[in-house]
Structure formats: C-alpha cells, structure tokens
Length: 186
Image 1 (cartoon, rainbow, N blue to C red):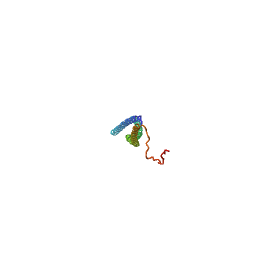
Image 2 (image 1 turned 180 degrees about the vertical axis):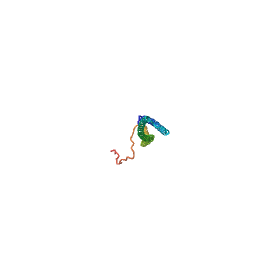
Image 3 (image 1 turned 135 degrees about the vertical axis):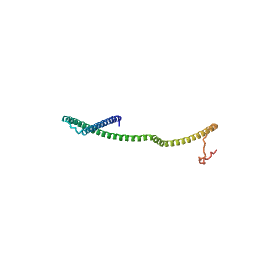
Image 4 (image 1 turned 90 degrees about the horizontal axis):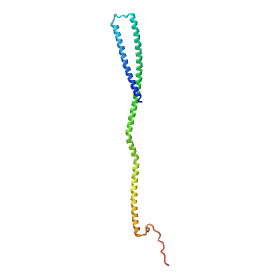
C-alpha cells in the first residue's frame, strides 16, 4: 500500500460521507413533500383543482418525478460506489493485516538474531578455544624443554670452560666388542 493510496482513500471516504449526507437530506425533503401533499389532498375535501392549476401541478409533478428519478439514479450510482469502496477497503484491510503479521514476524526474527549469532559464534569458537588450549599446553611443554636444554647447555659451557677441552661423552650403553687386542711392544 503506497502513501498516495491513503490520502486518495481518505478523500474518497470524505466524498462518500458528504454524498450520503446529501442523499439523506434529499430523502427527508422528498418525505416531507409527500407528507405535505398527502395532507393537503386528504385534509381538503373541497379541493378540486382547476384545469389550469392541474396542468401546472402535472408539469410540477412531472418535474418532481424526473428529479426523483435523477436522485434515484444518483443513489444507485453512489450505492454501487459504496459497495466497490467497501470491497476495496476490505481488501486493503486484509493487506494491512497480512503486512502487520509479516512485520511482527520479522520483528521477532530481528529480536532473536543477536541470540542466534551468539550461539553460532560460540559454536564456532569452541574448536578455536580447544586449539588454543592445546597450543598453550604445547607452548608450556616447549618452554620447559627449552629451559632444560638451556640449563644443560649452561652446565656444559661451564664444564667446558674449566677443563679447556670439550671431550665427547661416551655412554656405556654403546658397547663395542672387546676383542681389540692391546698393542704389543715388540
């Protein structure tokens, strides 16, 4: 529904109201005239219209009939207009109701969006947090190993500076065959 339809509907509604008022006024006037004519004719038994007055009355009566017929045509036209406007108003009300329902639904969705985004964010962040925790554990292990190696290196450097020569340290786990004969002095 556009904004130009609303003022147009208001203008038409105002016009219909004015026409209804005019129609009611005309109906009242016709009713009053018919009552007055009936009273005049019924109340005056000696009333015998003369020929010239009767022709004048007949011409006025014919004019009134034509006016009445024109008013009836206008009434029919306006009733048709009112019916079509009522149908249009009904359709517009349905459209407004549908749009209102849709608007409420969208407002509800908009209100729920932050919660949905938080939940989705949490779902995506869980693996990231797990990975960060794993990396932090590995980092602590590596730092502990680095400190251990640094300490051993510092000890080794200290021993090396005292002895002057850095000799390899043969471990006893490597055993070579003892069939090497001692050199003989001949």
